[in-house]
Image (cartoon, rainbow, N blue to C red):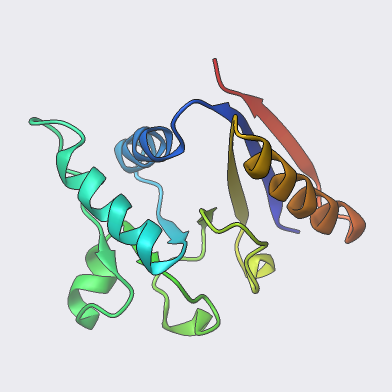
Length: 142
């Protein structure tokens, strides 16, 4: 069963997600990031500029098959074509809603910011997972 982890109280969600992806890449994890086209464009830019010495390889899900299979981090606005995604280990959901098809991943990470609206939408996602019996854990960001 898919494990769900909520990372709570991110001061800056984009920065936190970049650091999380850098840590995941350094530990050789494979991650699919789900978000809107706008959020993914911001994330793409942020990953290129996170540090002058770090390179975090990533690509969009519509990249050439060779690049897609070689990239440890895949950015997508649609996980409905699950079989076309090269990784099924971890899903980082940067959407406001629960990602349809999340249950096909081993693990889902939800990052929650400090804003009231973000917390409210995270509660809805929590409720969605909880009502379906998925194990949920939390990680308090300090």
